[in-house]
Image (cartoon, rainbow over all chains, first blue to last red; front, side, top):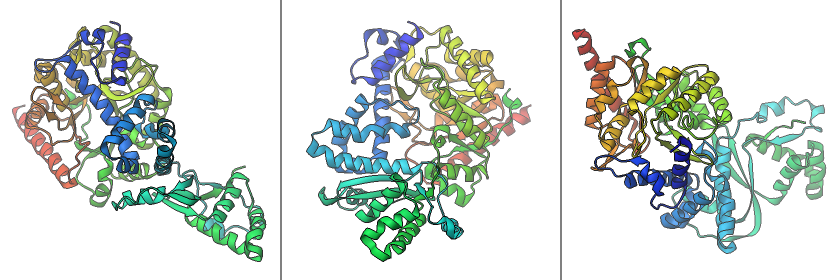
Length: 262
Length: 281
């Protein structure tokens, strides 16, 4: 049997259901004095499945906690079968988990679960994103007065943005704190959660709609600071510059911003 | 004999469970081995601790995803990132496994055994040379634990490693626990394996724990090193002379102090064997 044919047969066995290997692969292998080929192959099959599921348990602890061992195992086994790993680093295995949940489960089940998966994945993305060059309070203090009106900012590389329709943050928090599961409930109105790594610590904050709109304006419509102040006059009147500076200070403090690169 | 290669002493696998302990305690560990893929990221805690620990200790890079024997083209993106990490870490050496971990279509994330045939030998040797060209240094390859083997083998595993190191100039990472595990599973003499290796190519030793199920043994890295592996380690050192030794632990992490005690045991056993060896010489 050529090397490549042997390896392809081995790969098919590992990726398939845990049944006996095909005859050609089985007959190309040897076990040992007390280890037969089928047991030896099963060790590899079990290890493949177990290793990948362990990664997903670590990346989605709140989903695991919500579903329990058995349901989580079934869901992740189905995910792994449909989305075998394509990246050498297992860190990326859960990339498609949210989408898979949306497609795999009925909408009533999938919507809150997928949102929670998106929240957990956002934390993993923030965890090891590039550091970028976040604006600091010192940068702001050194900004010349004439540069303030034209100041434009971009999100820090680790900043993740999530629209939540359910109490996913409360569920995530309860798992983190090892507190009682709060139950899943829809929110009265969707809100925005921002997740970002500040120095080495990932943090999250839920935003009021006005603050979320202001940030979106900066990031998506590339507002300058002057444009932000102008937009805020609709809701803040003469207090617009004060509100803009207050938020800007908070966002810089949280490490959410870096200088806009045109 | 391996004495011709510099010996780093006694090291530990760098795992996130111990990052802060290492910085707080500056333990008497001669060096640390890092799993390369854990640090092939763009930012965050892992790289922060890597840089901080690299300032205090020599490091060695140990990969799990090179898939040197895989049925796919070598992943040039992976190799470039490995090189970037090596340039950052400046490791004493870079190792991976004699295995395949990626299939034709997907990553399999396991250290799968190769058939020890002439076809495999020339295929892998050519790929080792390619990797060495990118890294601009010898690649160090580790023997893996296995639970099946090819019925068409032309070589024993140790003869294959010997031939591979001769053909490609790679060096060897001798995992003593893996030799023991595979010897139990396949019914060969572990000492024959070790004596069959080219001693002057053995750059490093691994020690780790396994799970013994009676009829077979699985390489789990979640237990302390077993007595038979300690015995094989002493015999190996007596044969090879001083070789950098690393204690691996990948699950059921004990208190850091317990791991340091286990490393101290390796250090004391090693010193005893090497002193006796020196006197005899």
